[in-house]
Image (cartoon, rainbow, N blue to C red):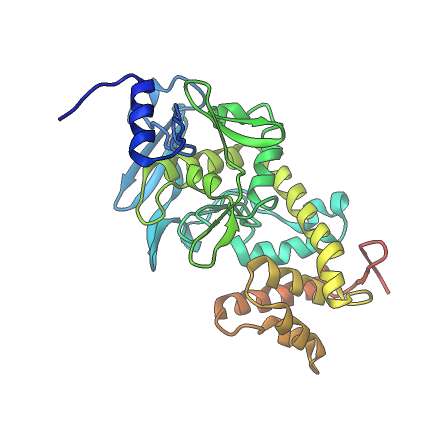
Length: 345
């Protein structure tokens, strides 16, 4: 039997039934408004840029405001996870080159180029939505799951750009934190840190869910979010420069405050420093294994092969490192911990 009670009557009955002081919550459950209403007809979009999303045989294409079509990615699965990716043969668009940024960020530009090659062949627009991070983007493959790091920092910087609300009209910064603002003005803090998963890893679950709501199935929201980021990167040099600026900031901070302290890197070659940065950016080896490699007779070789499970990464590192050392962009400087810079010996 269904009945209709005033809130006061319901609360009185609830407290009597469960023998304790209870309270009522009016509103939506936090995080429940992260699912976007994505219109099939983009002409009916009332705010921001309108994206048409088309799928053929698992391959998604996008079109923004009637412009030319562009590739978003294709559907794939990886164990328990499903999502979007691009085949290397399908990579396209502007690419990062260290030589284009060395005047701005000095020798760090080449350390970024080495890791960028292994992550994305240095393509600025690359996306991946099929692993536990739920969403990674850009030439440096910044991931969504890490608090106060990587993709959330990039969104903070994007929010300073004029185009931000054209691409993400439902997002806003409040008190320095990224929020999803719903149609009624309600806010969901996307930077709440939660301990989730079997390992209770601290991560930005709501930010991840906003970008990719359903990890084990394909959905139009992750396609739309990918389309937004790819189109912005394809069409804006300022957005691409911001990727480089933030990647450099992250690398310099970790080298100076973390890696140098862990491994006493003062005086080490730029190649050793670049390999250590690459290992930890991907997360493929522990500090203990890196220390063991540094104590070996051939530290560079041991760092390249520190985890044999990543044969593709090892091959990419060898290829790019050989190219860069022959070109004289790596293998020419040493790290000075006191100033967190590289100088010629």
